[in-house]
Image (tube, rainbow, N blue to C red; front, side):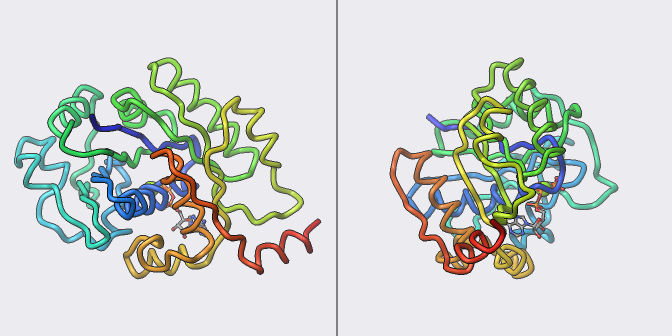
Length: 253
Ligand SMILES: Nc1ncnc2c1ncn2[C@@H]1O[C@H](COP(=O)(O)OP(=O)(O)OP(=O)(O)O)[C@@H](O)[C@H]1O
Ligand SMILES: [Mg+2]
């Protein structure tokens, strides 16, 4: 039985697409079969993160009735499959949750994980993705506006009976003005299932169009994403804290 997990955020730009591409690669490195699907139809960029933006057919073509689902499932060299969306403005369209459900139904049982890159916020596309998924991972930065937006999102998941797996806090710099992790946990009333540090290798990997967990698996962010993947499949992976992060944390106290 596939696990259908939406990666969602209240605020935009907090790291959903980064988590989707890297979590998919990390789960694949544990031998799991994974499909990453770009449900961010208005601002799709999963294909850009993975160097697949010039592929001829996308999820938009399936939703428009111009392609079969099997025609838009592409293999990434990091060992997982991708259903990209079209990056052009011309193809922007809204989607209903039953359309996602139809797609997931066709993919069901052929893969261990379907990981969904959701749109940010509480718009209809975002709600449709959360409604159609079985589980949701909420991602936020350790800043108040992102956390308060995340809270609304967790309420939407509750409303649609989508199981909230927990929160991933991304771009942690250990600076004194950041909201502490135990406060985030209390505010959202959810466990923190991932702590991803600020890591310039993330930007490098996006420029190289490769998941960081594949391109530089030892980098701090990659290790913490591997830990999230391990926890999802009931294994343990302890990331090593890089000396620069320890030093930075100590200096900013
Ligand atoms: N851990 C990190 N360390 C450093 N930079 C990061 C990290 N995570 C993400 N970024 C940067 O933040 C940018 C935004 O990330 P990403 O595209 O994954 O966010 P998003 O939530 O998918 O955005 P959108 O809401 O627009 O879809 C990336 O291009 C990257 O430069
Ligand atoms: Mg994105």
